[in-house]
Image (cartoon, rainbow, N blue to C red; front, side):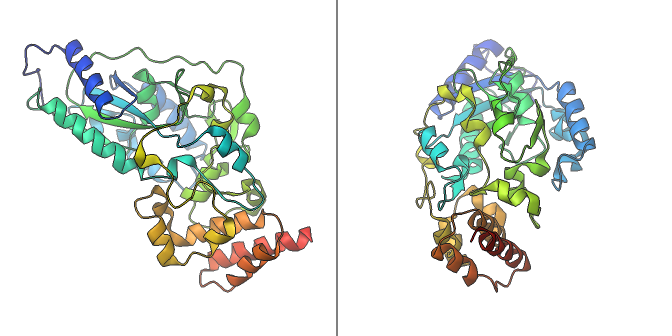
Length: 359
């Protein structure tokens, strides 16, 4: 891999400045640089896994130390270029007003537009190509939440923000509504000053978490997290947690919506992140009546495609069980009471029982 910068006019500091400029031109709100020492994050990850907080996310321990040691994952890696891109598609008050709505579904705001993996990966590849025009040869690899990478500790080291008590990265000037991506590279780039925490005594995220998944500051039990339950968990959602999910059918944003630092968040003007198919405020019954072909069409190019149609129906059944009791809600559930999927039938039956209790 590369030992020196080909262009003598671009010393490491000058090159870092150029990379920040190219990143801004590509739509990244911030670009930072870090070394690859993640020993503290490695220890925290080991403790988290030991407590089984990862639930069924077995991939979190599948790759051993490659997740916390970048040069094991990509031999020759010396530096990591971390980027962030804002994605908030609307005013936060609109999202807040939708929480636990009696008839509408809530979908995590990051999933309303085009799949962020595709957007950021494409831009990062363009950034790498730009660097390659000035540095030959360049060893690199692009990552966007798609491999064993500790993206938040890397971003924290690169000065993009600090990991809050809810375990999400927070930026002092921009809140937390942003995506992260990384370029592992063999370039020796000057590391940025790591961010320090500014959560102080605030515990808003712990207090508003619907399922009490944030069991202590900086400790998340994913097995209780709505994002885990509606996306990562493939089987039955534990019955005691179903009423707490409310109308959240894909992911959860409560800890971000109520974080005081998000008063500084800016709405994104990135067209790829604009809501599609009116999924920013859909009716639960309408979504539940989509057949699989409609679902495939409406979720094309979306991050939601990853959960599959069966999980989609399972999640909405829970949302309907928590919805206001109306003839249309009961009718929609009854229409799927004989669904081929045993998983869906189970959650539909639970939802119907919820309404019988309410009547």
